[in-house]
Length: 27
Image (tube, rainbow, N blue to C red):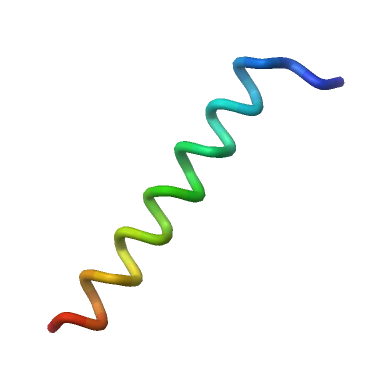
């Protein structure tokens, strides 16, 4: 179950989480 598309989606989710966290810290 190592789909490249699934991996990309996971990475995208992780990136979004990190960005959200950074934005919250800035506020």
